[in-house]
Length: 515
Image 1 (cartoon, rainbow, N blue to C red):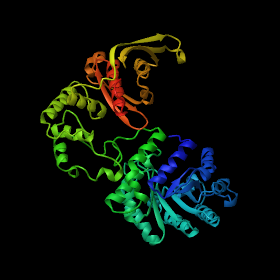
Image 2 (image 1 turned 180 degrees about the horizontal axis):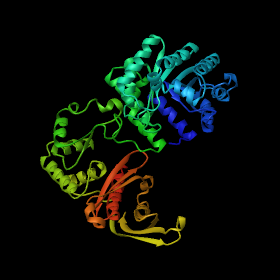
Image 3 (image 1 turned 90 degrees about the horizontal axis):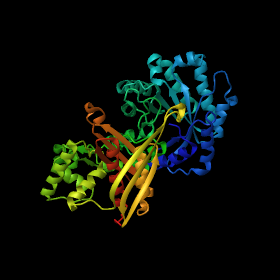
Image 4 (image 1 turned 45 degrees about the horizontal axis):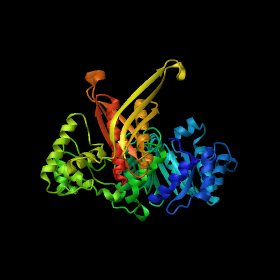
């Protein structure tokens, strides 16, 4: 992930809206664009719930704190809160910093005391604390005590390499709490290398920590940091803590997805609480029970985190699943047994031929509408289409072949006949361009449609190049996103079917009447 200054300025208000207490904005002085972020944040950010924090390090070994340019850069950022990383594992002090135990503690004391005297609030991130404590608990404890004695507001215990398990976190935090007493405020910073970052964060809170660091969507180096939304949801909904201001948890799904858009990292479908599949149900037994009472198969009300229940319609679906999915899409199918049977049988037949509606709600809705009304919305009528791929040897990058594609689409719409030709970097792209060129003359709304994801799967691989192909297409108009599916004897025919569904569904939900 490589965020621009503009990206950070867009994400910070979303985090503030969520209701977090601190937003760590980067390392001014060490990273130029982070220096620029803090400069612009002074006038461009108005935060209601959060305080902006600048990240940095304690003074260098053997350097007076007032003479350390990195410490000075922290002050120049004008951030009210400064987060300092410090070595709390004596092995890192002696081997990495190549200095003494006494100097390692002095680096903490001097830097914290200096910054507090300058009127800043200081959070100390005790790097590699858990490994350090297990190796030498005396030095690790002394490092935390030195920070508190110098005026640190919080000492955050960092599982920097992500190797801890919850019971070990409980033991270490509990032991440190006993050594320091109940007054000093401890924090937890967990990485997810064992898959336990959220669990380790909860264990730390249970053992006495009252400050937790994490990232929305679990972003972070290697396998990521603790997912902040999952931590807060567990603490609020499972343990009854009141943490986020203004009911921020109810906005967490929207905010998590908005941040994913800015980072250009697709949301993880199976992410706890906020993922698209977090409350998705499939199968006859589940559907029948959910129809009676949704709480029978859901651990919380999805609306508590701004999410919603989804019914997945597949070859496992019974009539109850189809009825619930119809209700989700806005169709009351109560008492329509014949229709439900027809739709259920059609879904099963289609999926036997390679279709899947688990991830293609838009195509399923079009199928359902067709069974309800006897026809699809007639926005256009395709006469024919074709594609041509041309390869020019020796013209591409690295002297390889240069390939280009051209597609021609003939269709009728709005009482007119159109013949449109599109060019693209492949046959599917060229088809998409040609289809858009024809349709936008009658339906300018299509200009807002953008294909955001394209997935191809070969279904019967034993057939080799004669295999059936399934394509899933994800489209957005900037406000909503929908998925469509196509199946064919090759990728081009399957893609064409999915593209047609995408345009029909988009026009339908834009409130456009066929012309």
